[in-house]
Amino acid sequence: MKHSYIPPYGHACCPHCKSEFDLVDAMPTVVEKLPHNDTAIYMMCPECHAAYQAAEKASRKSMAHQCFANSKRADLAQDGCIYPFAVTSMLTMELNDFDPVAAIENGHGLTREQYFGICSGTHDFCVFPGGLTIVAAKPTTSGAA
Ligand SMILES: [Zn+2]
Image (cartoon, rainbow, N blue to C red; front, top):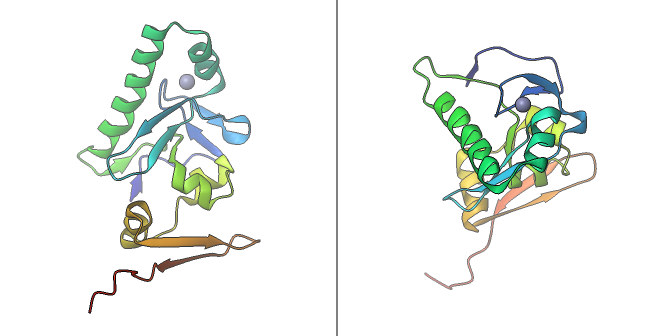
């Protein structure tokens, strides 16, 4: 995965206004249920986050849609570049001890099979102190031969 540009460590771009900000104080602003049983977490910059918190329901909705549109258009960019948006997922947060900086910088670090396996419940994971993560297929209980 190529990035359009690489921001300094611990920084990412607001999925709403695209400005770069420091993730240290980032808080999840909007969540979106994903079809494969994970939840996307959008962290807006402090200005947008505050505006969102103060906004009426209709404006919140349009701010959220702006985030979805920005991050999804990036996924479909012709050059394959990804804007470094402050977007992660619930599973990625769990794997990074709910640290937004680590979640954005490290991602989930799983193979496609492991990631979708955990989402669909065929795999499970265990995070050890220090961050070592073990992912394993769950034993099947069905007794299928
Ligand atoms: Zn913003």
